[in-house]
Image (cartoon, rainbow, N blue to C red; front, side):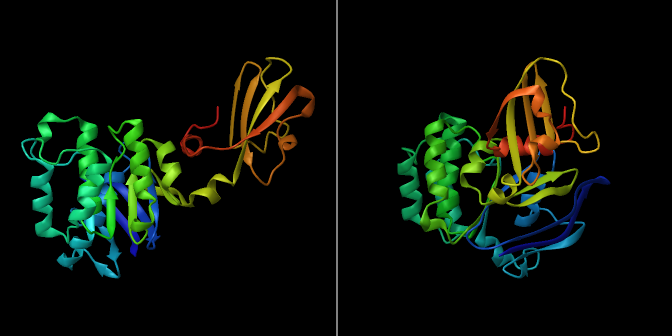
Length: 290
């Protein structure tokens, strides 16, 4: 279990994370999202113990990573820019990780095989995406129960992304807690069961992904003309609205009715559409309404 309580972190008196609280149980794939600079990587480094919080605490299986160095063997942090020399090979890295982790050679070889990677090639001779694939193999083979994967889809081609997603949700890894950051929210939607959205240092949204997406309903409406639409009740704004000529897109609370916002007389047809995770993220950012 990972438990974060009242976590604060700042740099040079600039607050990055403010009063962050989180509790993750075994078997969770948690998507950590936010714009660049929101504090996602900082949060992962705090969990790993690379950084110390200003206030608050992080407990891994009820113990502090800052007080128990043995806990680090149960956590693997894959940075968005791993710091190893390009002259190394994946074999070199695997031998290095064996010193620190209960490394599982069979899993390492199996995942390299999934990605068709040669463990003896210099990292300088392969693409960013291939490097990422090899680091994924090292992460899952480390034997760590907690995987912190920063921008893990970066550089992966569509085929590699699909293979990785299948790996993430496979039953043999259901005893882990995996925290993933990615700019590819479509990929996170496929694998994550819960998420946290960091905005201005806080968790602006946090919870079960399906539950949160099902709170909203989106309509795409064909209007009778191109005149700017007027909301029925000016004191009751929709969550999101955008008009492009005769096409109106509107997102409302699932417990509300469309006619609370739009008069039926101004449109021909209204189609109800699902909300994607990416749309959910954009809607919840400042200035989503237009």
